[in-house]
Length: 249
Ligand SMILES: NC(=O)C1=CN([C@@H]2O[C@H](COP(=O)(O)OP(=O)(O)OC[C@H]3O[C@@H](n4cnc5c(N)ncnc54)[C@H](OP(=O)(O)O)[C@@H]3O)[C@@H](O)[C@H]2O)C=CC1
Ligand SMILES: O=C(O)C1=N[C@H](C(=O)O)C[C@H](O)C1
Image 1 (cartoon, helix red, strand yellow):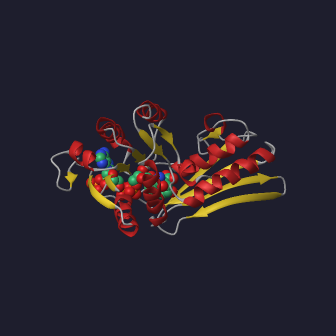
Image 2 (cartoon, rainbow, N blue to C red):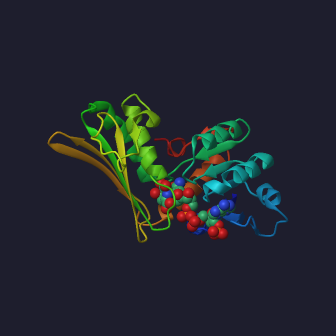
Image 3 (cartoon, rainbow, N blue to C red):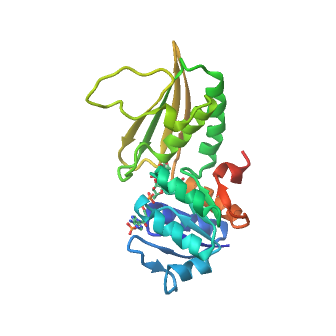
């Protein structure tokens, strides 16, 4: 398999290059912030044509252009970039009518396993169990809460028969002090140092707490997951997929 890496010079782009080498996957080339194409290609279209799957770990600002490259080349794309807004998800839905798109805010096995456990717990615990999500990342991360924090909260909301949009509250730190609203999901984002990605979803009940946590020791877990996802995606028909489909969880 040959992959094209969109965001090839970034932290994840480099980690994916390493994971590809480990797995015997060929990196056809990549694209950086300036749109410069790495590898022996005239342009992005030629890189896409030479790739079996494109893998995007870049930035929201590059999202539309990167997805367009995949659609125009008719190639599957795995999107790991976070900070995506509803309009980006709508664009993915549209693209998925023509090509295979796997979008996941976290490509690790651990987080995707945790999602199912959280959904089960949320379904069994009543709304008097407050749900809070705590995450910590390195000092360079630009989006908050992390895509994974939202993914875990989405699983909890699903377990409660609701949605992320309905239950999320992002205004804890505001000019207007207010107590917690029952049944909602709150967030706390810490940034500093070189933390690869720590997440904890807490069910806080009266007199006890249940904590579902995950810590990434390095970016290698996301990169290996992305390579595994790309290997799976290359044989899929047009459609929208997640890591849960890849891992069969
Ligand atoms: N799904 C998952 O499992 C994971 C997702 N992520 C997400 O992946 C994304 C990248 O993370 P990370 O590698 O740490 O970030 P970096 O900033 O290290 O890398 C981003 C890459 O995208 C490029 N880039 C930045 N802005 C633009 C732009 N406007 N147009 C085109 N290219 C651009 C950068 O180019 P240049 O090098 O020239 O600056 C770089 O190659 C983030 O959204 C992060 O949250 C991260 C880890 C795991
Ligand atoms: O920016 C990062 O580094 C990470 N981003 C993803 C997220 O926003 O959840 C995944 C991982 O936690 C690392």
